[in-house]
Image (cartoon, rainbow, N blue to C red; front, side, top):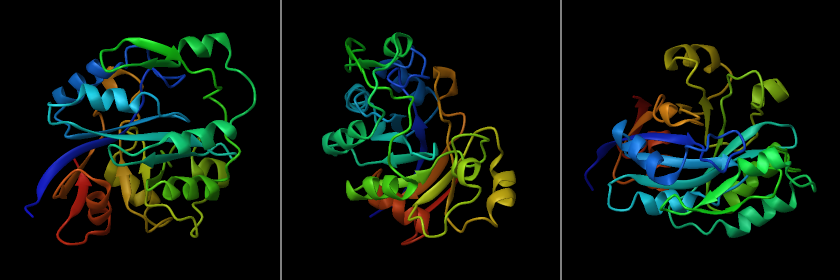
Length: 248
């Protein structure tokens, strides 16, 4: 199968995330991703997945692939990205997440900013859970949950001074079965490699962590692979069968 290059930003929030701007609606998000020359994006809202399918539907026929996902907050308050193939049934995973979130309702100010939408940007509801909170999953349980549903687990923004494995634990556990680690757009890739290369042998990625339209694609990776699916992304991360990944 012929290989081609895919530019990917696999850490993007929508209006469902309590810290995401209300302007992060499906059609506008897709338009911005295409304008930035992206081929693949992932919708990774905090502790929730409801808007991923709507973004995927909004992208139909555009050539943009949308991976559903989420950004889990562990009990240590570290963030772990879960990335999945399009069409994956994330209902069971989401139910497990909601069972393990704090048993308190979201405050009114958060409910306004936890908007569930359809592919036409219509508001269909508001998520009542406290998505800003930490789940009861340890980092090990969070990675196991993601893998148990067929996903990839990526440690989020390990360079940040809060909500990262390093900020919360002081290190990256060598026995934690991560697929990769990510740095934020604030750190140039070459500097990140020098800073964190000695701490982990895991593949290093750099994505936008976009919460506003103008942030989409501000950091991305280029994958050389056959098709935009997790199996191919895993091969690229491992450098197998001619696949590769590099900063774009």
